[in-house]
Picture 1 (cartoon, helix red, strand yellow):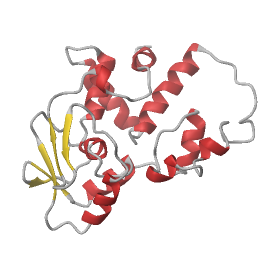
Picture 2 (cartoon, rainbow, N blue to C red):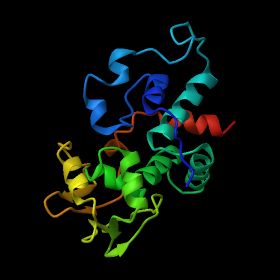
Picture 3 (cartoon, rainbow, N blue to C red):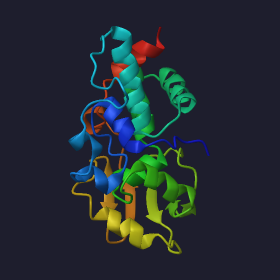
Length: 206
């Protein structure tokens, strides 16, 4: 399973905003962005010449890191989105949002997407009563996501639900019963991902 194993806080500093990659730590004063809001590295505090390409690249990198994907995986999602009938940028975000690991995170069953990915990979979740251990599994409307009754991570999942105040409007969650349901495909205004998807489309369209 390929994934980025580098420092998570360094990624947030590079993008200049919180990407909530470390769960509860991101909500405290220990967050690296709170202490050092400039990019990492020797030239982090230097002046960077802005260009159209740089803005597009940074937006793509931000989205890729936000969802925890490698470049090849992200490009594959873009290629699939470009073949759909809707707006390419919105279709891209919709596909990324409906990944099982992201749905688990959005339901509040994990403190971060990295934790959600690990929990899914280890078989702690079921979709419509069947165990699914593929983080990229595409959840569909009316699919029910539940924590496996035999899961040894139920306490970890319950602890994660304490960090959640609201659930995305296209999802329905029962934190007491540890079940969730996807009500419908998310609309663009229901996706709070901090990216301008049109810049990503412009980058890949060159």
